[in-house]
Length: 236
Ligand SMILES: [Zn+2]
Image 1: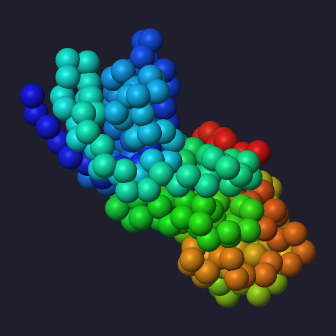
Image 2: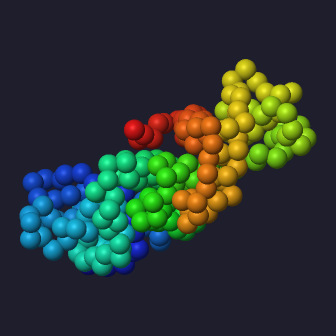
């Protein structure tokens, strides 16, 4: 039987038969893969922990008749604190759901960013939803929808006055180029978005956002997500 080794993050799991699990891995090498964990529901099962959501590690896959079976796993990090704090847990679930819904092929850039996002939520005490917002901005960037806050994407003039998100194209435009469906981006939202864009995950805990800017930023990015990808992501 052919064996493959992949570096991967567990991003989803559901029951399969009585004792098995069908797990979604986001692998560095091959993007999204569905794999089986056999007989892992018992307390003493060898791969019990490896199948859990958020597990990052190396997995040995063996080709079976009905798909890939995980035969060995070496856990690098299981982000245990995510299970001990409900806010952290939900934020991390949102991040994984966004990854699951937007990224099918291998993408080393996003692979690295999702690990940084989980690390920021789990260990670095980045304030609630900050890592989620940062990750959303990076997902847009990686899918070709980078938000440019300096130049109008319509007429290319410098953005000075009011700014709008043209949801049809996922771009920021000036008041001359806005359409009926464009959403105005208020000042607090805009400054928050700029801060999130330029701050790396590791520094998120040090930034100060005023005027409820982070919630407004999250709301406008959520709207943009639905227009871009035609679905909603898990959000509490
Ligand atoms: Zn314009």
